[in-house]
Length: 295
Image (cartoon, rainbow, N blue to C red; front, side, top):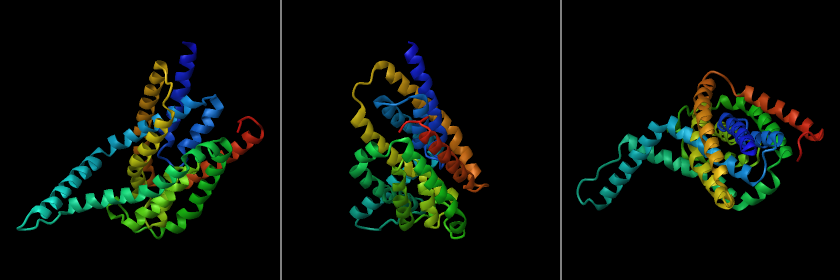
């Protein structure tokens, strides 16, 4: 029982870290690796746990943006009905309305932005897990990602013309998707990578951030499903309980953090997160070379 209580405590700590960091540009995977090293939460179960709690964080996005998601899916099916009706109808052709066209455009952009990471993930997932999931690579990713945020925010802010998700086009979505591939390096952060991609595409910070939230749903469900399928052997009943607790904690924390993060971005620059990343990476380099954290 003592071991179970210790495992639950460690799991709650990691789940809180995930909930806080998943959607802000500091790398949730990187922070979970660092904290996991510090509290000795490693191994096959820790890997599965980190995947399951990411799904908890994703559920927070579904809840917070339910109206947008449900409405868009509803209009998508309505548009499909109209299109198939036009094909079979011999008389008057019914045109798609504004909401139907927007829903098609939205989901087309999500698919386009998902493709680059999906291809690279299928090709290199095992190699990434083998060679990049350690504290040194996280430190490098945190530093490089922080430097990129500092380097690109001010000059690219002047070029931001797309201020909301509905204005994003296919070319912009592809740029976001290509930059999202940077997040396969732990420490780079999926959130910061997609936001930088949005900046290069002329998308505002808030619009790029919200697009990255929606993009996270298929990307992370797909990546998580693949890893769970590979690693789900031998989970005990006690560990299932720990997974459920972690899922719930990550969901609740992410639910709180996401709303506050978006409100923050409406008023403040990303520079604070960039400086934090660089600061943490320097500390991490010191801890690694002092052998406080093992590689």
